[in-house]
Image (cartoon, rainbow, N blue to C red; front, side):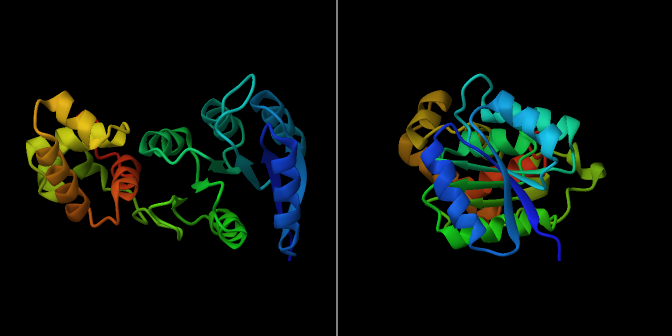
Length: 222
């Protein structure tokens, strides 16, 4: 069986070295190269044609989000998984929009990193692991039928107009306090709306709700 060829992109050599040791313990994985910034990552993807890129977000010269966009535009078959310290919902949403196939926090267990690489390489749906969700989480297997994409969220998930507004802010990474301030409601009310949204989207937390909303294009036109 051919090994999964992985390119590591991180501006810290020590982290890249640790990841190399971690990944190569699995005979199914092979680290084929390392890049220290976004521009170098693009060059090495073109040169090495890896199966999977493990990408940090904060990078010199070209940030991770923009690097993901360009990689997916020029090499759509190359999967990209974010590996970062940032567990903010807004970063997850931006990574999805850019084309990432997975999102991991750097303190994720080594076994989970290896498992996610294999899952994304197999073409499984978006995988995310954050402090709120320690195991890979799958977004809906198929996107919504285009016939329903233009329908308001209230019809799709029985969300109220106010919950739709709250969801839009949640996806952008607003805290309950910031949502309350932006919509001129109390923080207690904002929290209740967020809890209702999480329940209606059948999610485990804020991050999963944001992923589902963005992945399915639920906020298009909102």
